[in-house]
Length: 326
Ligand code: ADP
Ligand code: MG
View 1: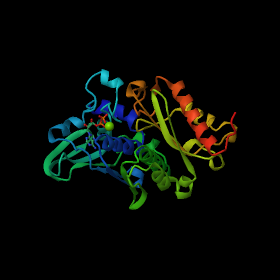
View 2 (view 1 turned 90 degrees about the vertical axis):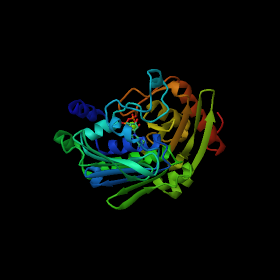
View 3 (view 1 turned 45 degrees about the vertical axis):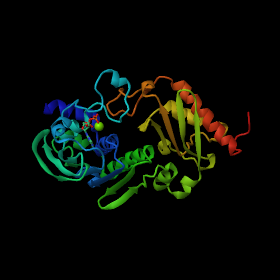
């Protein structure tokens, strides 16, 4: 129902940045290699995401907007073996409950589907000539939930949150070419060649990215790799630190601590590296179904992963002759 979708939207769609995150994750799950994001008035007036992914078949379009409708998992067992960013089937239903949504999608260039959903009701679908992929336009977010709208901060704050989440998505997927535009201005453009350092340069600047060092390490369960800054170029905020697990940006303080531990006494108290840590592991070892936004996860062998990360960073910095052998 519209009401239950609005309630669910309260959990998944807190602010414009949540819409951007969910739409871009869908594009990534659809195998897109190019994702173009445009926001107007910090996303409150309009958010548009265009991808060149798999598209949605005409018969699946009405289903995509149903709550708990997901094409990504089929069984309960799959819930513990999630290979995609989405799996709860809540995002599109939630967004459509609190905004005006237009969808254009095609599984191959030619005949596709255009659909319009207002107030959670699909009120128009028709066939039309559409490029392969999906274009979703979300207008007037929270127009029918004034309380939610009140909770939204200044446009400057909301835009900063959008930029932040797009940066993390770009860092998690250097193989995908992403653009972000706000009110006609190009905010971010990544090449999509799979070069993480180049993506870092696009976000933090060329000199910052160049001053970072690559690291990699593995054990039987985990592979960790990424870039981190040397102790003299660290920051006083954790915001420059991104941890990705199987391509998903997550928040995990144990892993932040493990990264910092790798610096030993070389890191000043209260300072944090600028870093991207990409972890790959068997999806069976990570439970993503902890929180609706999927940014908190439960790791089966967290201590083992933390130890691997600390050791990898420690070994890498030792190569820079920064840390004398203990
Ligand atoms: P989830 O991502 O958890 O499956 P969503 O509500 O985000 O749920 O999306 C519902 C379904 O709509 C997805 O499972 C997928 O089949 C389809 N879908 C949504 N966005 C896209 C897209 N950009 N490209 C292809 N299919 C999409
Ligand atoms: Mg999704």
